Image (tube, rainbow, N blue to C red; front, side, top):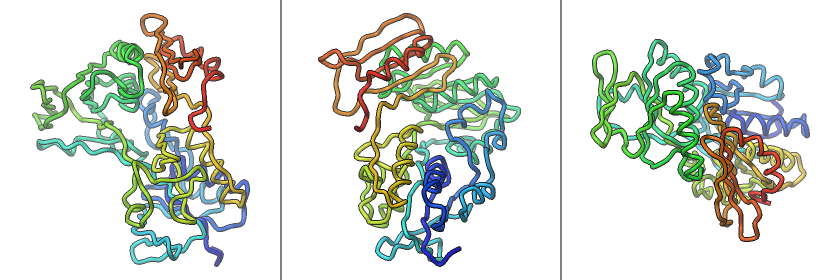
Length: 384
């Protein structure tokens, strides 16, 4: 590499690789070093919850090997490598005892699964699926099995329930909530999605939590907090994600839910930026692709010497539940309105209007998703 200090990006997920692509369009000369704790393959994380219905293993979901990405991006990529410390005052990071200096540092290391404390002797049968290597491990464990217990009824939990059920597995979903996707969906839309998944044979156990997981012959027994016992073969944990902030906090960076950045994606220290699932942008931590892409484009400009700020327009979320198609756009923070439900069955148009009658949010299910493009034109931006 050149003697010039490189741009260093920690993370090779959607955030890291897309930022690198956008930046390389503007700067083809500055050295680029990318560091990842995983194998560095390029893949689309949202596709992890479509693999079983499409009958794709981890290799089938991978789009490019790290060597190909290094060539494409004119970058050096270190795989299976963990950064152990950040020294903002001297613009350097540490990989064990090795010092690496940077011109600018970008934290794009994502979020980690929330760990569920579970009693019993079968905790090794509980699988989070947060990256391609997780998916590979779970797919190997699931070979020849049929009964899956899924923890979590949020967006990712519902997507995995649909995918695994379509892939031929028997699904039981356990979550301590009254509806699917609480906090994201209006109850009417949640009921429609749940009904669609139940039509595939998915069984929901909403309210209790998994108290213990025990081996029972060749399978497992999941003991719920309400006394119910569910036989299963393995467990998927999809209870949520927590932005990775520990290393940033240890380095003295401001953190809240995520690593605190302004609209320029700059942290509380000069020359350090963050984007993607680990970043809290002007108070918003959005774990979706559209905000990530907007941030990648804006930060690429800044890193190329053209200071730019990110703005979020309407950013509806398409949830991958083919059993009941769903698109949702919650009202922006600070905006309140009245919800109105139209339609029947699983075909619902649920709109939120402010006091002036303007649409500020929606949830569309079933056939109603066809109205999303027209409604998107009416929505306010999430962060103008």
